[in-house]
Length: 247
Image (cartoon, rainbow, N blue to C red):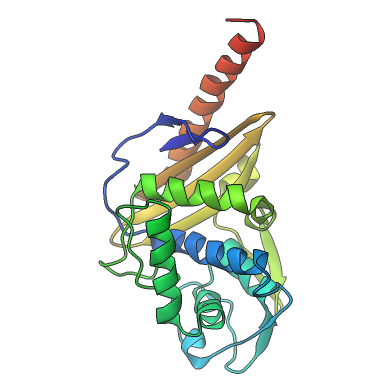
């Protein structure tokens, strides 16, 4: 799907309601709930999170914690948004939900509230599960509302790399450094679903979001997102030009 962020207008769609595993795009919902709690002054980015054994033993992309260590919420949020860290996702779910199950209940309640009709979460990070489902349309709804409510989150999602405990953690969104105007948002991958990408881009007054789900590899998902954004900037740019000249 390709949407104009300011209006929500759909500029292109193909199989937008096809159900698929969201993989690490699930983290957008987790980050949404964390940002919401901070906005409501229920927590602060400077709060300390104690890392559990459950978080340490989570598979996939990691920040490599030790059980009992403490880190600020902001460090873990950055790890989730930039490096897609699954151990940070569990640690924050436990911190903000009391336990992972309670946090997942909140994720599903928010999905229902946002009208994400084909989305269901069973974990906060997106590790493989046939029961964890979404669609391109639902991801658009979630991401657009996330950016509308928490626009400063883009400052985190646009970070290309950062150093944590002497490790350089990199962003897997290839478009951040080779497509002008891209400033987010999130990648994902699980074997059963393929490679996902939410790409947000801003040129002048034109703000777009492309969602690509189920690509065969990283290169193809970036190519498809690039094609969508190219199309969108031409299409919306032409509309703005016509409006200026009274067309």
